[in-house]
Image 1: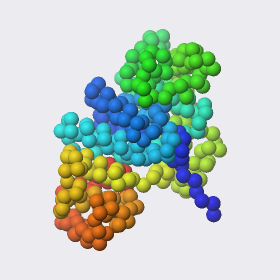
Image 2: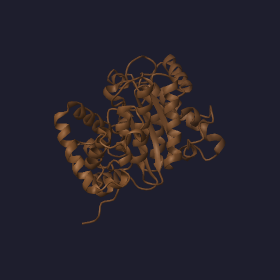
Image 3: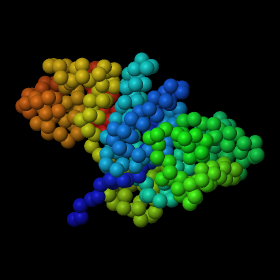
Image 4: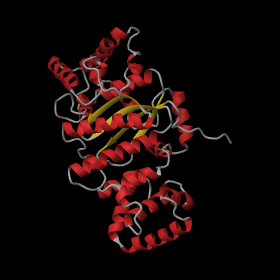
Length: 348
């Protein structure tokens, strides 16, 4: 039997997204948006991920990423947990901020990434039904994707042009954008001459806003296992394995979580730096990290001991046994274990 190919491969393209738990707000104001963008830039530097486009909405975000080092899972887990930790500390809250682990959909390079960028950039006007105060899905059900009036077109264009929390203004040529944003890779598909690219890209979005979106086109980017040609999607399905639901297949494409992911999750729940407790003898947070790491990272007892600064594997094993017994009697520990598991989006 042929060895299955990994989906997270060098230079792979992905549509990444996540939303607030129970669809709650994750960006309450400009300060929150800026912090997330700062972390996005730091992710580029830390993990050599390329950010080609992004859009932040009050309760979710979208990003088009490329991974030269095939490290999407680690980079996105760091981003999500880092922002959750910051948000929880700022607003004096505890528990998961996002509804689960980020979602990622492989994208076939070529015209597909340009189409996807347009879908991503239209989110500010789509999710508010072009300023009419209705959700995008509600708008479609009421036929609001039909050709709009002149006033609606004007309102749509104004909202899109003025929206600060997406990369559209960079693509449209209104501003230079952050240094870490890679825009020309997609923009070059709009026109051969560099001087004409932004104008051409603006024109494409203006045509859509003037005539309404094709609902069947939008479905290419929603709840799918991959974005691309029929052959590309079939390869993704084969790599993901059997399953009736696209979401089931996407789940199997994810890598295991890393030890660092687990540490960040527990750190986020406790709002105290891990360096203050991770190596303390008998600290329950330390043992919660080890239990979660043993369950979900695939590390052996010896490897876990090495991560903890040289603990003997036998000591790790006996300590985990004692912690398991303690958890069975302590509902607070059970609650923390469940919260961290949901943050990592892994099955208990």
